[in-house]
Amino acid sequence: MQQAPAVVPLEPDRPVHMPSGPLTMPFELKDNLVRIEVEVNGRKQSGVLDSGAGAILVDRKVSQELGLREGGPAGAAAGGGEEAKPLSPVTLAHLAAGPLRFENVAGYALDLGHLSSSAGFPVDVLLGAPAFKYGAVSVDYARRQVTFGPSGSAGRCAAPIPMEILHDAPVVEIDLQTARDEPPVRLKVLVDLGTRHSALVLGGPFVRSEAGKALARGGIAKKVGHGVGGQVQGTVARVPEVRIGSTRFGELEVSLTSDVPVFEQGTIDGTLGVPLWSDGAITFDYPGRHICITGR
Image 1 (cartoon, rainbow, N blue to C red):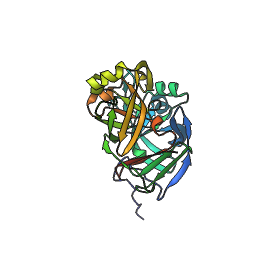
Image 2: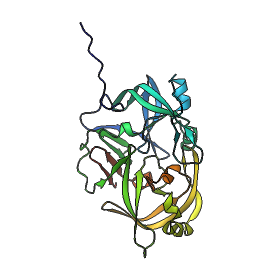
Image 3: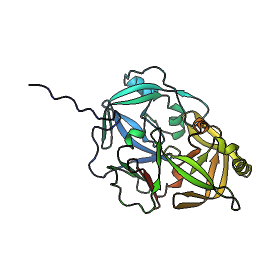
Image 4: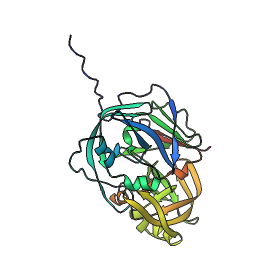
C-alpha cells in the first residue's frame, strides 16, 4: 500500500492547523507584552505575540538548547536600540501557539536578551507575521484574552481602519496634528504589539522635518522604549490630535527618536503602540486588510 504524501501548505509559513471559527484563550499581560505559552519541537517556551515582527524569531540561547541548525548570517534585526542583532535562519519542525500548529516553519534565531531583561521575563519566541497573516487575531487587553479565527470572524467593526501589508507587517496611514494652528501631517506607521510604552513613536525623516523639530523643542528628553537592540532614547511631547481612518485620538503623548533603524529606511515613519488600545481591544484581519480598535 502506497503511503499518502505529507500535507504541505501552499505557503511555507502557513499553519497546518487553524481554527474553523473564533477560538479564545487567555494571555498574561507582562510589561504590556502579550505573553502566551508556545511549544517548540515538543518543549514549552515563553512566547510573545508581536505584530511588528515579520517572522517567527527564536532567542539564540533557546535555539542552541533545542539543537536547531542555524544557517549563515541573514542580515540584522532592525528593531529599537543602537545595537544591531544578527539573524540566522532556522527551521522549526513543530510549533504550537494556542490553536495554531506549524510544521517545518521557517524562522530566525537572534539574541533577545535585551528584550527579556527589559520585560522582566524570558522572551523565548516572538510570534510574528505567520501567526497573524492567514486569519483574524483579536487581542482584548481589558479581558486578557486573545481570539484566533478565520478572516471576518471577529464580527462587525464600527470604524475599520484600512491597512496595507509591508514586509509582512501591518501599516496604516495617520494624520498627525502637531499644534492646534497647524495642518495635519500624513504619515505611515506600523501597528505594533511590541511597542509597549508609547502610543505613538516617530522617527526617520519626520523628526528632522520642521514639524518634527518644532514638536521636539516643546518636549522632554528621556528613554522612550527598549527594543531588541537595547534602550531607545528620544523626546516625549504631546500633540492635540491623531486621526487614524475615521477615528480621532486627542491629546496624545508622542515619542520622537533617532534610535530605531527601520524608521530610517523610508518605508514607515513610526509605530502605533499598546497604550493607544490598552483599555480595550485591537483586531488584525490581514486577509481583509483592516484593523479595528475598540474602547472598553
